[in-house]
Length: 281
Ligand code: GUN
Image (cartoon, rainbow, N blue to C red; front, side):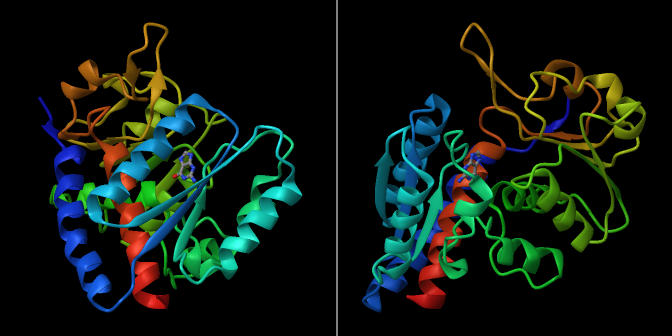
């Protein structure tokens, strides 16, 4: 059985540490504030936003929830972002993805003032990460790195494989591993012989959004396997991209779903919001 990477527990520890930083800010007269924009009524997004709000409450961050209808126009959304950019009491913001189909997400994300960009999705922040001058890191990849570090898994010189090439997870994840001197391969839907490649990975990060697609025979014995997937089965159960039972037999380290990467993403978001308030409050 693989060693569990307990994101739930580690995230709780991090939130505990962050409380102290919020108190220090408040002592300076700064109440950190995170604005969360949710457009439309995607059920998964609603749950994510609710969890983000709860974490803010626990740590003492003021959260501002902005709910917009599914029919919102790109211009209306951009105007809301500009208003929040101007608002001195708001230190950080995020726009929950996915956005309704009439909206160009990349265009909208680039409207967020880079210093208030809690997700690190603005093109300037992405560019900073990719040129070694990172200031704010995307939350999910940052959370995965934190799990790897806290498990004591060495990254430098290791073979890392990231399955998934999204702007939110796959690409920044690969870059973070590269920054720590891993030899990184990115796989995606057109990759041939996926199993042959994943079997070489000392560190395997799965972020594709397909239930249980990574099985035990695709994993190198002893590997560190991070499961970013959150897939809801027909019976309502949430499972990752990793077939937990078979991979657990082979891997050295493994994240559960739920209770692995998910809580870490939120802890990193809290950290980004606090950092924004510390730097620009
Ligand atoms: N949708 C899925 N993951 C994320 C995330 O990390 N941030 C935002 N804003 N939306 C998401």
